[in-house]
Image (cartoon, rainbow, N blue to C red; front, side, top):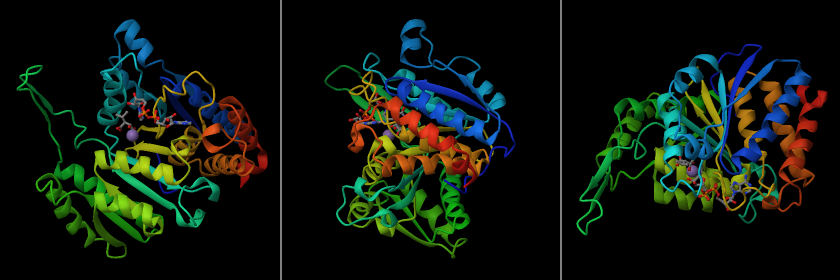
Length: 367
Ligand code: NAD
Ligand code: IPM
Ligand code: MN
């Protein structure tokens, strides 16, 4: 996604690779293969270091996010390419909370940018919608809200049990994400911004979102900004997605609306995301999870991970290389060289191989 503030823009980049669990371990190597192909053609050094953090390690050694990991990633790497976490053998999801949410919080990756772009007309379930109609980005707050982990049980396991999960919204947190969304719109020539909350019911938490939004929109009068309650947004985005360029919302609503958006553009197999702190080590991943129902079958779609890698290259200042990846993904969609979720009959590795070859083509990298 052009317009992401860069980490370094330097000629060289170090990438930490965390494939994780399930199909994360199947799609991530394909994205790495594509990245290596494009780096080789562009003759730019891209160094990868892989980490085996995930359910297996947790079950074997009791380790989720190793001590010192956050500092190491922050100081020694430009970006992180992440697969997915989640394993039926860890019903508590403790390792995902520690590793994925841990990295989002501890690296302070406050922007979760999730583009929703229809790359081929046949991929949308919406009637009569085409590529030009579905092109927006969800900017999800990524460090607080209902994900903050503040809460607890009272009288757990008894008939009187109470469970509390607090919605944490700081002035600083709300302001920086809404400002980022406005800036993103302005810097990319996008005219419309929609802030979505549930302030009619969540009067305290989202009352703050309302106040901050009203203040900031005065600074961005060049952007046509409006507010929709999240339930209405869910309806409107299906009824007519042409209305939206930039959507900014809280952590939980952003999680939900980005899966909805993904389906409008071909499904979870294609959807990328960037967990970003402008200028600092940031994490890129497909929107999807570890898909235990697909894991081990070799047919998971690797294109979401490839498109997340393109976002990572943009972040690193490698614009032509990022475009080569997107160009190759579009080509695979046009040739129907895709996995079964998109109606094809190709396997994960076949698609990865094909896209790597296409993206590594000298002409692709130059365009
Ligand atoms: P999921 O995204 O793993 O799967 C949802 C559906 O989409 C499934 O039918 C799956 O087969 C399909 N799908 C997902 N990715 C696909 C791909 N690349 N190619 C083809 N089909 C694909 O969501 P879920 O089933 O709700 O969750 C499974 C596990 O993943 C859970 O443990 C959950 O917590 C975890 N999860 C992790 C992340 C992450 O690491 N960022 C994101 C979402 C879910
Ligand atoms: C996502 C996932 C995560 C989230 C889960 C695994 C905690 O659904 O990245 O969208 O809710 O953020
Ligand atoms: Mn999600």
